[in-house]
Image 1: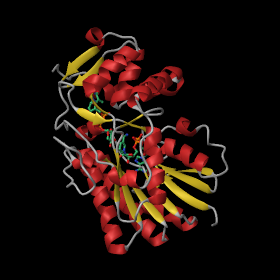
Image 2 (image 1 turned 30 degrees about the horizontal axis):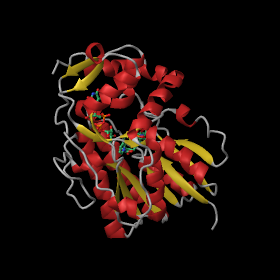
Image 3 (image 1 turned 45 degrees about the vertical axis):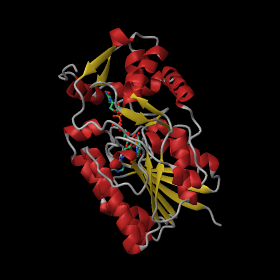
Image 4 (image 1 turned 180 degrees about the horizontal axis):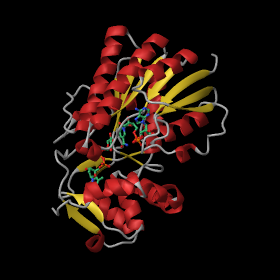
Length: 341
Ligand code: NAD
Ligand code: TDX
């Protein structure tokens, strides 16, 4: 088989960059073009170590820009498209969801149209457990109805539905992964775990929403990237695959552990602040299908979180610049007027 070219979108973000690094390492016979709009969440430093790999190239561009996407695909044949590009932060979607609709719904649709025209071998849409909404008991399998409850989750669900429609209507060889809450190196510090770690390192308080008893299933980013690779290579077209971490914790438990690992005290550093509107209490995934194609998460949260705290301690030069400027303004908007729980 001749060397394949994969188009990865959103490859300068958290999971995308970890995926690009892993795919280049584990698949010596592919090359990757990374299409990324370089939003606030992108960071070229995430891929500094692969920048000079001749199998890697970067194109700045917006997946919702139909002409830019068409030009790129006309210029170069792609065998595979993996779509990570998205607006991803629930709290930002509550402040303003315009960009979420544009990228997560329209952007996905633009890519699907282009993928169909280009006759790609595979189209993989990276989605989320949030599309199932709050799961009071048990675990969602891939046949569970979608019931998104935040503007972010609703936008991701819109993208997923377009992917399924393209697979059914046009036989596009498309698949979807729905990953659970992901943690690990290179995560932009607006999300719960990196925000709390970096605040605690700096001796700042951390804002725990509501009673902190919401449950999330934590998936290490390397397990998430490996799961996407497994589905890309062994999944069945038209199918959805859940990728969960098998590490369910309340936010309170995670906060207690982070406070301990950062050698701070819960009493002085944890602020119980007003809850997120529409906050989903619990997510839980049934991952039988992904296990059947040979994937299972390898990282245990107990050691994964220790390694992650160590990574943020050892990589201050990576995250410190990210917490200045626009991030500081966002932090002020999001947290300064928040009451206490
Ligand atoms: P991220 O926010 O860290 O990065 C997103 C990347 O997409 C950035 O590099 C950004 O510049 C790029 N991007 C945004 N809009 C774009 C556009 N219009 N055109 C091109 N590029 C654009 O995201 P992440 O946390 O790595 O998430 C990646 C994917 O995984 C998303 O689709 C997300 O919904 C999904 N997901 C994330 C998690 C999680 O816990 N982080 C869990 C499950 C699924
Ligand atoms: O300051 C905070 N305080 C707090 O208590 C933040 C930012 C979060 N939280 C809580 C809210 C959630 O219950 O922590 C939990 C995790 O929050 P986020 O990191 O914002 O993640 P979540 O809303 O669960 O969504 C994440 O998982 C699924 C990702 O952001 C999505 O992109 C992914 O699809």
